[in-house]
Image (cartoon, rainbow, N blue to C red; front, side):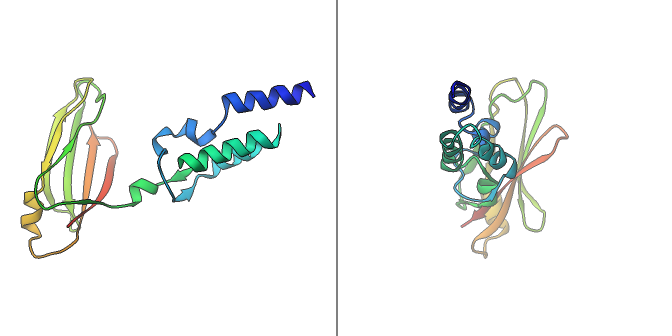
Length: 161
């Protein structure tokens, strides 16, 4: 009885949510594909008792951390004027940060670069070149690409309205 109580207390205090701890960047997702790994770990928390398992599942689903690709799959709307401002935090010193705005055909419509200082980097992309290149079109699909040095390219879908 004491072992089960101790295991339940440990699970409640240290592992209330496997996905929330392992993937804090996913917090706020509202739907998407479910990450099977954290789901299995959450279900394993039913072994010490029903309460830890229920708490883990409630926190992971409630926070949205258990969902994969929810935010990145949804396109963000942008206007045809103004500037996209990006301010990544803690850019490694000496690294080259490059951001591009690309249309469906792969044409680079706007780009900016910065050298990391170990702190925040300021990048900006004017939207006017994209608007001029697609003046007659409505709901133009664009992609925002961000790359550090020669690493992988992170993307965000955009729709210019």
